[in-house]
Every structure is written in C-alpha cells, then in structure tokens.
Length: 275
Image (cartoon, rainbow, N blue to C red):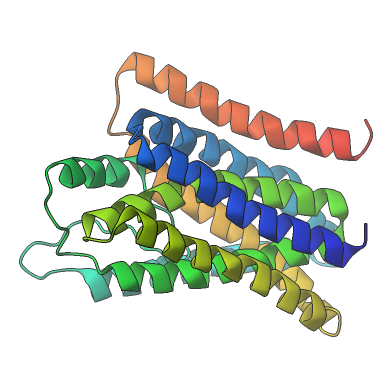
C-alpha cells in the first residue's frame, strides 16, 4: 500500500470505527464500559507519545532540545486553548468543569453526569450541541493531520498513532453523543451529526498528505505537537476523572487497563518492526 492509501484507510476506519463503538456503548448507556475505555485510552496515549512519536521526533531532529521545546510549547498551547473553551462555555453563576471538544476529551465523570441527566430528562443548558460539534469537527481534522504526519515518517508510527487516536476517540465520541441526546437531539440526528464530523479526520489526513509533501519541515513540529497533545489529554483531562474512584479495586483496575493500553502500543511497535 502507498502512504496515501494508508492515510486514507487509517483516517476513514479510525473515524467510523470509533463512532460506531461509541454509539454502541451510548445506545446501551453502559457507562462502566466507557469508564474502562478512558483508562485504556490513557495508556494508549502515553504509550504512543513516549514509545513511538517522541523517539521518531528525536531521530529527525539534529538537536533534541528542539523537540523538548516543541513539546513544552504544545502543552502550554493546549492549556490555553482549553482555557479559551472553558471561558466560552462557562456560566458566571454556576461554572462547571466543561470538557472541551477542540483538542481535549471528555472524562469518565463527564459521561456519567451526562447519562444521569439524560435518564432524568434534564436538558443541559450549559452546553450547545452545535458548538460541541464544531469543536469536535476541528479536533477530528487535527487528528487527520497528525495521522498523515506520522505515516509520512514511518508506516509503523502511523499505525501506532492511529490506534492511540482511535482509543481516545471512543470515550470522547461517547461523551459527545450523550451530550447531544441530553441537549434534545434525537438518536438518529446525534448519530448523523457525529458521522459527518468524523469525516473531518479523512479530510485533514488527505489535505495534510499533499501539503506536507511540499512542506517537509512541518513534520517534526507536528510530531512534537502530537506528542504534547497526547500527554496533555492523558494527564490533564483523563487522569483527574479516574481519581474520582479512589477505592483499591477501582485503582487496580485502572492501572491494569492503563498498562494494557501501553502494552498494546508496545506490541504493535514490535510486530510492525518484525521483532
């Protein structure tokens, strides 16, 4: 397969597969499953960032300090973006911890609250379904760019990056789906809106392929920002939600699933290299 074929296949399959799995979980409102997926996604994100993306970025860079600066810049950038989204959606009288759609993921706690509201037939007045879809579309577009950049460096890196993105997209898509239902959208409308949004991943991947072919110098910065995004999402947005269940049993389960996510990324890396 050509690099473009890999990008198209990964972008399309990743977007549609994560949406279908999220819809299956959401339609059955199995919040316990979503919570477990969050733990697994943390491991996949950290594994992809530290075991694959950063090593590749260091190999491409003549000065390792340039990579670490990119990662630090990316973490600060995502922090600022998250703040901007929070300011945009936050009520002055009752400011809840919104989970932004552009660049960050819903935590398990957000999903559980949304499900509770949905069963109680209370509309979520703090979020706009359309704004969530706009933010999610932008996020999916960026995911497509990151997938393309990874595949253009190495097929194995592209596969690992795609797996990590799918892993963290499932709980995010589930959260978006539930919030749309909670905002008054029908199941069919919510599914179609998420489906259209998922195609932004394919568009971003194909567009990046043709742009990055003439802008090779953008690959290294994108890899640095990709690792920063994964580290920030895992540590800032997902892990705090796990701390809401401090009991020993839940902690053991969370650690096990995080290790499983890291292990999957490690195994895919070994398999792709033929070791």
